[in-house]
Amino acid sequence: MIRRIISGGQTGADRGGLDAAIELGIAHGGWCPKGRRAEDGEIPARYALTETAGRSYRERTDLNVRSSDGTVIFYRGRLEGGSRRTADTARKEGKPRLLVRIEHMGEAVESEFRAWVAEHRIEVLNVAGNRESRAPGIQQLVKRFLLRVLPPKAYEAAEKTRLPAEGEAAGLPLAAEAEGKYRRTPLRRRPQR
Image: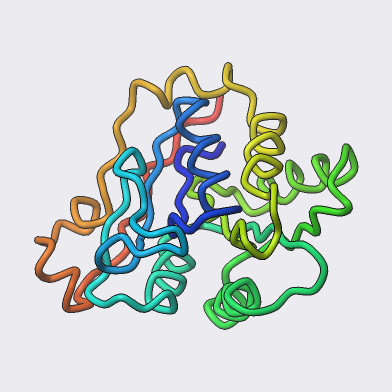
């Protein structure tokens, strides 16, 4: 069961993932560039993100892939730019990844997503993909997709459980995070019923 959705907070797919998490009451977070940098200026404060030491999109991309159990990448047309880097990083890190072309979204892709989440036991999902300027409307498409595949009733317990922020999970002060001295702490698994 997905207990947390993370992303880099960029316009488009990233924010669609965070918006869905907020609406469903699922914990959310992730890494964003220093200064909360995005193509439209500063990432809004409503998104609970942790800033990296630098302003590079690459650093936050790599950290979000490493901090998750799997990454779903939503894109239009060809996989390129930051979306391609995210897919390459997931492959290099040995992390599950699912590529979703928004032109093909529908019931078959929704079923494929659910099966992928179950197969890889995804609890922390990294949502990535095109920014809004590259694929206008993608933010709303991603949000609606996730609202369909992640029904709110499944998350009643998750709403009551506060997951620690990245620095808290690692038990390190934010200064140590900024220096890149962090480790991933496994999430506690729920007992099967």
